[in-house]
Length: 187
Image 1 (spheres, rainbow, N blue to C red):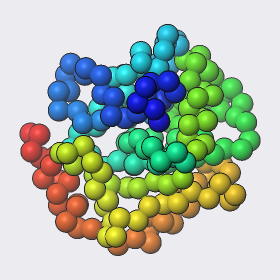
Image 2 (cartoon, rainbow, N blue to C red; image 1 turned 45 degrees about the vertical axis):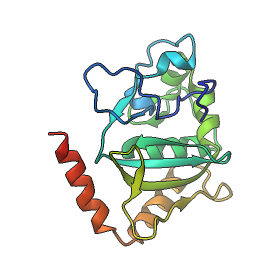
Image 3 (cartoon, rainbow, N blue to C red; image 1 turned 90 degrees about the vertical axis):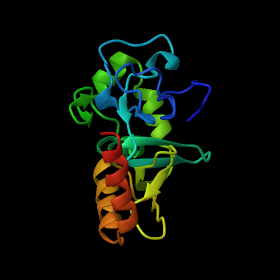
């Protein structure tokens, strides 16, 4: 993800100016949270249009081959990675995630960039947003789910691998407790 806003989606740290969410620390730019009815002039026009993320929210930190990363809500994180690694081209009416189809994303002009960006995923970490805009792992030892592009070639293999990874980890109860406290501090 680029901070110069040259590639869709914008980096999650670009929260824009969410009028009702002054406490937002990041923004999930998963397609299920965007108005896909029409394309935008530039990537910058999408800034602030996603789902606000707050301290204590459980998120996925997605890291790309170039070392950059972005944060998505847990509903969008693995779905976006699975979509990006999908080898078979989706039909226009096939779902990318949630109720969003390829056709919806093409109408918005983001299908190719989104697929290309998430096709470069190397790892995913499950964690909680800290008040310092960081992600604190929910597991002991800060493990990351490592993406294997040779075997993870569709959404199902990515999801199955991720679920297996999550189920094999030992929770870091300090982070779990902290996440609850961070969320409650917002009132």
